[in-house]
Amino acid sequence: MPELPEVETVRRQLEEVIPGWTITSVPLAEPSMLRGLGVRDFERRLSGNSFSLPRRHGKFLLLPLSGGFWLTVHLGMTGRILVPTGPRSRDPHDRFVLALTRDGCRAWFVFRDVRKFGRVELSAGTPAPRVAGLGPDGWTGVWDSGYLARRLAGRRAAVKALLLDQHILAGVGNIYADEALFEAQILPFRPAGSLGPEELERLAAAVRATLERGVRALGCSISDFAHVDGRLGSMQQELRAYQRQGQRCERCGGTLERTIIAGRGTAYCPGCQV
DNA sequence: CCCAAGTCCTGGTTGC
DNA sequence: TGCAACCAGGACTTGG
Image: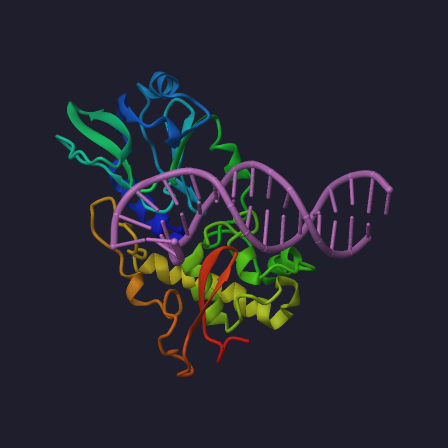
């Protein structure tokens, strides 16, 4: 699942390969993947523009173009980006493809997505409007335990559900939510407003540390996630809670359990998360 | 059949 | 009582 560390890994790789390439056409664009505009509008507006340095906010990839346009990309659950040079390898799950040129060479920007949860949005002047409504970036953003205290105060929903709320903090998904709560030793179904100052401090530190670990491991390669060059991340080998129900807790030796929060499978240790 | 899950949407509930 | 904020759950999607 592409969450913040996975998207950051893709951003860093795109930074190395796409600046300077100019879009010549849009050979493939499934309408269901596009937001706002139709396929024709995409092609008309994108053609002739070139890529510059890619940015990221939370799980959104923000690709500024020379003409003042922005491509805002969300990888959804199984999205991948490939930038092959020369002939492109086709796949039935390719949803959005840009033909590129630079110094007489050809390349492609390929958005491949088995499940159709990914989206591509084209906007002028600024990234897609939804990005402005997101909370601070969980990894690079300016926020602390005081911010969490303000946003969680009085809320009765499970703390994990609010960690998944991109309007509060952008970038945390199901994997890193379970990992951060395990690290902070906080039960995921605790009402968010019930967390005390020390717990919020631990949670803030755990969220940052977990995302940081994910970025250093080049992401978590579960469910189709791979890098632009096809290689895999290694965070899946470091997981201590996510999907480990029934297994032994590395911290207290107890057995991890599973429940459902916000419709998502949730693994936690009843022994040392309180 | 259930499970995986990111975002959006809906309808019901809560509390001021 | 009115209203906005809040909250839970469903829809979407395909493969294991």
